[in-house]
Structures are given as structure tokens and as C-alpha cells.
Length: 211
Image 1 (cartoon, rainbow, N blue to C red):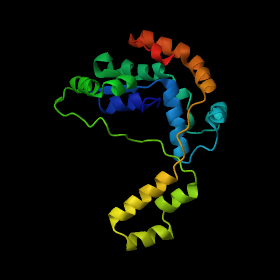
Image 2: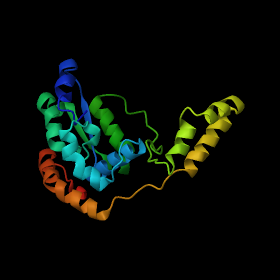
Image 3: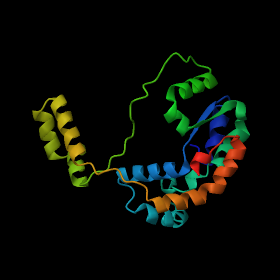
């Protein structure tokens, strides 16, 4: 919602007392995670370098926000759209780094901002949306899709064994998680540097770890 230019106007028109929590991640890490998600979903055929070069043309041709890898990392204007309408008293900025380093205290600070009980402690060791890309997409589609083999397995095997077998096949078929090319990381840091410094001044927060 943060990137959508009309989200703030729509949200506060319908919910004028809305309190907003914005979690910001290092824009380079966010971009790479976004790209890996698109790869995992099978929606991005290009290499990261090619996808970044193609972004302006894709936008001109009407590709949706899912392909706006670089653009989504310019946070300041996105935040301003919400703060302009709601003020800082209804907006809380949380850094993803803080959520990772000290999840309990960070979540409790969010509870305080929202005015709800802080007695509930969420499970902090669970990993959600972990990267997964199959080595062979045909095998993944065989396991996850509507294949004849899957229908036979559903009829012949108990749910527990079927689930364990599917998980094992997916684990064996999993490709190793890619690492961001250091040269691309440095170039992205250079592109985002001025934006991060402007965001530091706007938020009055130290974001030097991002550059």
C-alpha cells in the first residue's frame, strides 16, 4: 500500500482515525527480496541486472508495481503522502533491522502506539515466506499442481504421509538461495544514497547502516 499513490487518500477518506505502522527495510535488501519473490512465483524471467535495466521500459508499457523493483525503494515521498494526511501522531516508523534484532521490544512498542495490550508475545522464531525456487519447475508443478500423480497419491496415502512426501520432494528440488552480486549491491547503494540521506533528515533517524 505504501507505494500506491492513491492508497493514502483512499485509506484516510474511509478510516479517518487510522493509525499506520510503516516497516522500512534497507532498500537494497528489499529490492533483492522482491526480485527473489518474483522469481519464486515464476513471474520474472530476467536476471536481476536485466530486470533493473528493463524497469523504465516496463513501466512505460504499463507493467504493474510488482516490476517496479528500484522505484519502490524511494521511501520518503511514499511516507509523506500518509503523514501529510494523518500527522506523525498517527504514524509509526519501524525499522526492519530493529524488528530482527529485538523483535519483542519492537512489537511491544507497536502495541503501545496502537493502544492495545502488550501481554501477547508473538512467536519470533518462525520463518515466513522463506525463499524457494525449484531446480526443475516441472517437478514442483507435479507436486503442487493438479497432476494425475497427485490425485493418485491423495486417494492412496494418508494426509500425513502425502504431506511429508511432498515436502521431501520440494526440499530435494530446491535451488540454493541466490546471493546478490556485490557489484550490483554497490551500484544500488550509490543510486539510493541521496534518498537515504534525505530520509534520515526527514525521520531524524540514523540510517547509515543502509549505505
